[in-house]
Length: 76
Image (cartoon, rainbow, N blue to C red):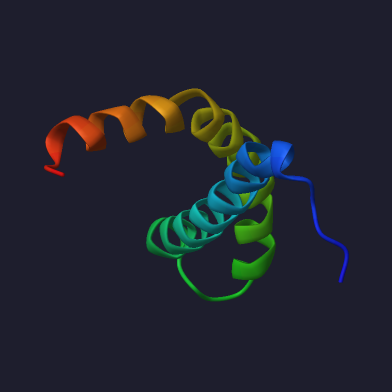
């Protein structure tokens, strides 16, 4: 299996984390707000396509700050 160079780790992390969170949250909220019946998967995928780029940008922008906050709030 081909490995990704370490310099791309922050982008890979942001991509995987944002995809995971956007998938779960858009699926859950789509179901809660519009129901899990007919057309659910289509509505979910539409919501995911809107949510993922936003989530990706947010992870890229705040991940470093969140790591720094966690480091300050925890003891060594």
